[in-house]
Image 1 (tube, rainbow, N blue to C red):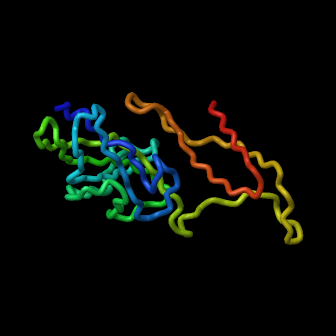
Image 2: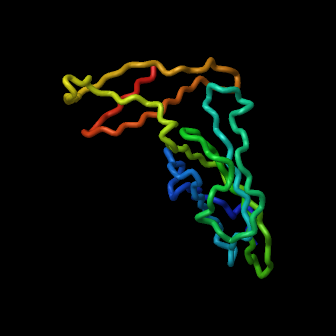
Length: 193
Protein backbone atom coordinates (compact mmCIF):
# COMPACT_ATOMS: atom_id res chain seq x y z
CA UNK A 1 0.00 0.00 0.00
CA UNK A 2 1.09 3.63 -0.38
CA UNK A 3 3.34 5.23 2.22
CA UNK A 4 1.73 6.83 5.25
CA UNK A 5 3.26 10.16 4.22
CA UNK A 6 0.69 10.21 1.39
CA UNK A 7 -2.03 10.97 3.96
CA UNK A 8 -2.15 14.63 4.87
CA UNK A 9 -4.25 16.71 7.24
CA UNK A 10 -5.15 19.92 5.50
CA UNK A 11 -7.71 22.64 4.83
CA UNK A 12 -7.57 23.80 8.46
CA UNK A 13 -10.40 26.23 9.13
CA UNK A 14 -11.73 28.19 12.09
CA UNK A 15 -15.35 29.33 11.83
CA UNK A 16 -15.31 28.08 8.20
CA UNK A 17 -12.39 30.39 7.26
CA UNK A 18 -8.67 29.81 6.62
CA UNK A 19 -6.48 31.76 9.12
CA UNK A 20 -9.31 34.19 9.99
CA UNK A 21 -8.84 37.59 11.61
CA UNK A 22 -11.23 38.99 14.22
CA UNK A 23 -13.13 35.83 15.22
CA UNK A 24 -16.04 36.95 17.39
CA UNK A 25 -17.16 33.54 18.69
CA UNK A 26 -15.63 32.98 22.16
CA UNK A 27 -15.78 29.21 21.51
CA UNK A 28 -14.90 28.92 17.84
CA UNK A 29 -15.47 25.88 15.66
CA UNK A 30 -12.55 24.03 14.01
CA UNK A 31 -12.51 21.89 10.86
CA UNK A 32 -9.96 19.99 8.75
CA UNK A 33 -9.81 17.37 6.01
CA UNK A 34 -7.93 14.11 5.47
CA UNK A 35 -6.46 13.65 2.03
CA UNK A 36 -4.84 10.65 0.37
CA UNK A 37 -2.45 12.22 -2.15
CA UNK A 38 -1.68 8.92 -3.91
CA UNK A 39 -5.31 7.72 -4.03
CA UNK A 40 -4.12 4.23 -3.00
CA UNK A 41 -6.00 3.92 0.28
CA UNK A 42 -9.62 2.82 0.45
CA UNK A 43 -11.99 3.75 3.24
CA UNK A 44 -9.77 6.43 4.74
CA UNK A 45 -11.52 7.50 7.94
CA UNK A 46 -10.44 9.39 11.02
CA UNK A 47 -10.79 7.42 14.24
CA UNK A 48 -9.48 10.02 16.72
CA UNK A 49 -8.09 13.56 16.87
CA UNK A 50 -6.06 15.73 19.19
CA UNK A 51 -6.44 19.50 18.80
CA UNK A 52 -3.95 21.93 20.37
CA UNK A 53 -4.19 25.72 20.59
CA UNK A 54 -1.24 27.95 21.55
CA UNK A 55 -0.98 31.67 22.03
CA UNK A 56 1.09 33.52 19.48
CA UNK A 57 2.40 36.41 21.55
CA UNK A 58 3.33 39.68 19.82
CA UNK A 59 6.89 39.71 18.55
CA UNK A 60 7.99 42.32 21.09
CA UNK A 61 7.72 39.80 23.95
CA UNK A 62 10.29 37.27 24.94
CA UNK A 63 10.53 34.23 22.71
CA UNK A 64 9.97 31.99 25.75
CA UNK A 65 6.28 32.96 25.77
CA UNK A 66 5.88 33.23 22.00
CA UNK A 67 3.87 29.99 21.77
CA UNK A 68 2.45 29.15 25.19
CA UNK A 69 0.01 26.22 25.24
CA UNK A 70 -3.57 27.33 25.84
CA UNK A 71 -5.59 24.16 25.29
CA UNK A 72 -4.98 20.52 24.44
CA UNK A 73 -8.06 18.41 23.79
CA UNK A 74 -6.11 15.18 24.39
CA UNK A 75 -7.07 12.29 22.14
CA UNK A 76 -10.79 12.23 21.37
CA UNK A 77 -12.20 9.09 19.76
CA UNK A 78 -14.32 10.60 17.00
CA UNK A 79 -14.62 10.58 13.21
CA UNK A 80 -15.70 14.26 13.36
CA UNK A 81 -13.53 16.57 11.22
CA UNK A 82 -15.76 19.66 11.27
CA UNK A 83 -17.68 21.62 13.87
CA UNK A 84 -15.24 20.71 16.65
CA UNK A 85 -15.87 23.33 19.33
CA UNK A 86 -13.08 24.98 21.34
CA UNK A 87 -13.42 23.82 24.95
CA UNK A 88 -10.48 25.43 26.73
CA UNK A 89 -9.89 28.52 28.88
CA UNK A 90 -11.43 31.80 27.74
CA UNK A 91 -9.77 33.23 24.62
CA UNK A 92 -8.62 36.84 24.89
CA UNK A 93 -9.87 39.74 22.77
CA UNK A 94 -7.41 40.73 20.07
CA UNK A 95 -5.09 37.78 20.76
CA UNK A 96 -3.49 35.72 18.00
CA UNK A 97 -3.48 31.95 18.35
CA UNK A 98 -1.88 29.10 16.42
CA UNK A 99 -3.43 25.66 16.29
CA UNK A 100 -2.86 22.24 14.85
CA UNK A 101 -4.57 18.89 14.89
CA UNK A 102 -3.17 15.38 14.94
CA UNK A 103 -5.37 12.60 13.66
CA UNK A 104 -5.37 8.85 13.90
CA UNK A 105 -7.04 7.28 10.91
CA UNK A 106 -7.63 3.85 9.47
CA UNK A 107 -7.68 2.77 5.86
CA UNK A 108 -7.41 -0.30 3.69
CA UNK A 109 -4.24 -0.66 1.66
CA UNK A 110 -3.81 -3.82 -0.43
CA UNK A 111 -6.45 -5.55 1.68
CA UNK A 112 -4.86 -4.85 5.07
CA UNK A 113 -6.22 -2.40 7.63
CA UNK A 114 -3.59 0.16 8.63
CA UNK A 115 -3.56 2.87 11.27
CA UNK A 116 -1.99 6.18 10.37
CA UNK A 117 -1.20 8.97 12.83
CA UNK A 118 -0.45 12.30 11.19
CA UNK A 119 -0.12 15.88 12.54
CA UNK A 120 -1.19 18.91 10.53
CA UNK A 121 0.85 21.97 9.74
CA UNK A 122 -0.02 24.81 12.16
CA UNK A 123 -2.63 27.41 11.25
CA UNK A 124 -3.56 30.70 12.94
CA UNK A 125 -6.56 32.76 13.93
CA UNK A 126 -7.01 36.01 15.81
CA UNK A 127 -9.82 36.98 18.11
CA UNK A 128 -11.92 40.08 17.62
CA UNK A 129 -13.24 42.31 20.37
CA UNK A 130 -15.28 40.00 22.59
CA UNK A 131 -16.63 42.49 25.12
CA UNK A 132 -17.39 46.19 25.29
CA UNK A 133 -14.84 46.57 28.09
CA UNK A 134 -12.07 45.40 25.74
CA UNK A 135 -12.67 48.24 23.28
CA UNK A 136 -9.87 50.79 23.62
CA UNK A 137 -9.99 52.55 20.26
CA UNK A 138 -10.99 56.16 19.80
CA UNK A 139 -13.28 57.37 17.08
CA UNK A 140 -11.75 59.74 14.56
CA UNK A 141 -13.59 62.56 12.86
CA UNK A 142 -14.14 66.26 12.80
CA UNK A 143 -14.90 67.96 16.06
CA UNK A 144 -18.49 68.76 16.78
CA UNK A 145 -19.58 72.35 16.41
CA UNK A 146 -22.85 73.17 18.13
CA UNK A 147 -23.55 69.45 18.54
CA UNK A 148 -23.20 68.73 14.80
CA UNK A 149 -20.38 66.69 13.33
CA UNK A 150 -19.38 67.82 9.87
CA UNK A 151 -18.15 65.60 7.08
CA UNK A 152 -14.60 64.33 7.31
CA UNK A 153 -13.69 63.42 3.73
CA UNK A 154 -9.95 63.19 4.47
CA UNK A 155 -8.22 61.94 7.53
CA UNK A 156 -4.49 61.63 7.66
CA UNK A 157 -2.46 60.39 10.56
CA UNK A 158 1.21 59.52 10.60
CA UNK A 159 2.58 57.42 13.42
CA UNK A 160 5.42 55.07 14.15
CA UNK A 161 4.72 51.59 15.44
CA UNK A 162 7.02 50.34 18.20
CA UNK A 163 9.48 47.72 17.06
CA UNK A 164 11.78 45.42 18.90
CA UNK A 165 15.52 45.40 18.59
CA UNK A 166 16.55 42.58 16.25
CA UNK A 167 18.24 39.56 17.76
CA UNK A 168 20.05 36.61 16.24
CA UNK A 169 16.85 34.52 16.31
CA UNK A 170 14.14 37.10 15.70
CA UNK A 171 14.06 39.67 12.89
CA UNK A 172 12.69 43.15 13.61
CA UNK A 173 8.96 43.15 13.00
CA UNK A 174 5.98 45.26 13.89
CA UNK A 175 2.29 44.50 13.72
CA UNK A 176 -0.58 46.90 14.06
CA UNK A 177 -4.20 45.89 13.54
CA UNK A 178 -6.42 48.44 11.86
CA UNK A 179 -10.20 48.40 12.05
CA UNK A 180 -12.33 50.79 10.05
CA UNK A 181 -16.07 51.23 9.94
CA UNK A 182 -16.49 54.19 7.61
CA UNK A 183 -19.76 55.56 6.36
CA UNK A 184 -18.00 56.09 3.04
CA UNK A 185 -15.36 53.96 1.28
CA UNK A 186 -11.95 54.16 2.93
CA UNK A 187 -8.38 53.50 1.86
CA UNK A 188 -5.57 52.55 4.17
CA UNK A 189 -1.99 53.16 3.08
CA UNK A 190 0.90 51.68 5.02
CA UNK A 191 4.44 52.82 4.39
CA UNK A 192 7.35 50.91 5.86
CA UNK A 193 10.52 52.93 6.18
